[in-house]
Image 1 (spheres, helix red, strand yellow):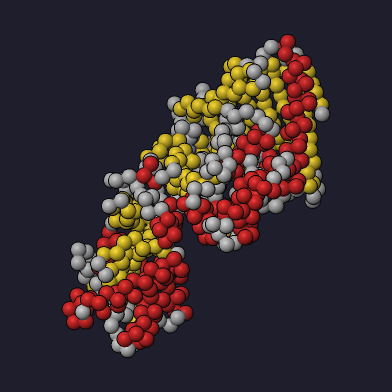
Image 2: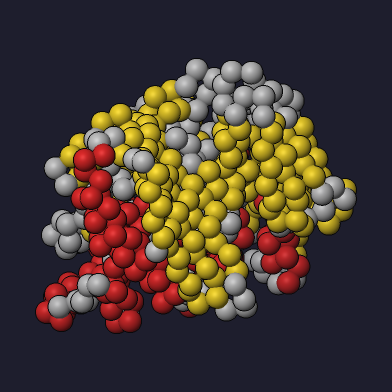
Length: 610
Ligand SMILES: [Zn+2]
């Protein structure tokens, strides 16, 4: 540890060498939110103040050791896997300024060096000895412990709390949880993993549990883990959160426990942008343990570290009329360089067919799109403004992975069964870019009742419903409603709708052969996919729009025993592959569907000689 004393400025330097990859070390150390919670720092209160040219200014407030610290948090700076720097300018409390700079260096194939520099400028020099002791005996040893702990957590278990180093689980608590979880799952390993996770994790890992992320870490089936949390929520062990994510910072800027409380229009004060909820991307379902399992405290410990926006690979402040530079390796993919203050965007597609360019210049004035070869690049960032500083960001334009979106979960049979009361606010319409809609109907069911009698018809119709209902969850679909003898089903993946239809037709054929010796039940199935609107229809989550109407009309073109799909569905690669692989006979035909001006190209799938 090195101390330098320059009047009221104190500089603390300390290092830690960890046996871990640069990538994993960065994941932990850049997560300043986790680090601060681990260090036992009290929570901070943040307020965003919009800046006239875009973006916002952050003001923080913290009470610690009897002092109130009020500060302006300057935009943090970083380049992924290289360094970060956080600067706080205090307006209240014993400090005037605090700068934490962290640098990573790959020492050799195994070790990474973490170099920390903390600069503190004190407001009152009289408190210097106390502050010095506090840093020496408390803050710095804890920081170093956190950074050394990185070494023992180098696998992909980033989201699993580091707290387990310090917290031992009481066996009776663990057993009590296992007993509760046995109500919702027979998978003992999964129950055990989730019980440990709930008991060991830091609060921040439990605030917004992402089931798919856990499934990936544990090598468990994603759907099984999600269903665990859904059933657990029904039992009162978890609460669900519908988070509406900001397209810019990916943060959950609006969160509610039910869909009906969800807001469609959201403002992110930190990015200073307005955006709308859509089911495909921005509405995410996460879970929090119910207070009966474990009390989770959801405070903010640091709002501007690089770990909270891992899609931002670099963030750099550029003073008026200045140019800054850094180096970064671009992988294949789309990147964007932008500043909320200057609005210009440099969109970079990094691809093998791209131009050989090694230096990229963002001038903040004009937007531009370029295609370049992946690899190490030098970035020059210029601020043409003569008075205002700008913050420039290098964003990797990928969306969050392994999240449960609203469009996916609301198209799940289990979800609709367990949470039929989870509906949108009446009158609210939320867009879904692509959903597959399936309609069925029984051919000639009216005359069937007349000729065969009610009891016979009732039994036959019921058996047909059993087949439709029993198969729906096997193909990751859901039944939205029944209309007389018809059903409306939804699927996230078009191929699942086709597989479901094939299976249902097969089982009906078998039923006819076994029970009746003739084709008593004749089912018609039509499928189409496209954009829809999710709505609340009679207190049920329903879907609405042209895609739904067209799917219903397509079903009308069935002869019975066959399946009719639209060309949109046929052009889906997985659907095409299935039809080819199963050697399904097809008939392509044009049809004028009622209510649609243009004729539609339809494909009839002929399953067998009926
Ligand atoms: Zn935002």
